[in-house]
Amino acid sequence: MPDSCPNYLAKMLPSLNPAEAAELVPSVGALKALGLEDNSQFTAALYLMEMLKATTEAELDMHMNQGKGFAEGLSCAKQISSSMCVSLCDLFDEAAQRGRLRIAA
Image (cartoon, rainbow, N blue to C red; front, side):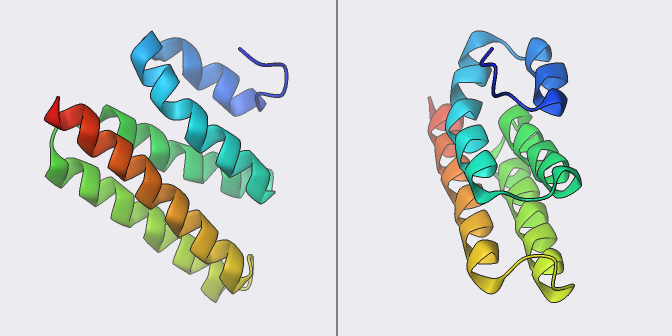
């Protein structure tokens, strides 16, 4: 586990198998790069974890859309900028794409 791993992720990662952890790594890096406040980063990570655990495309899409709704809510509440909202939504889209590939395999 990288030293730069936020505490909340350090607690989540042991519950993942190696394939799940590898799928989560790109999202974690992108999420950290956004520079969200810790509580917002934690909530976004929870949606990413739910996406990772999805076993159907419908379940994956539900969690992706919940994550995007969370991003839109932060933007409406002026907690993040519009461009950061787009970046966070893109992060959920990219994680969903990886999830679709996993589910299809």
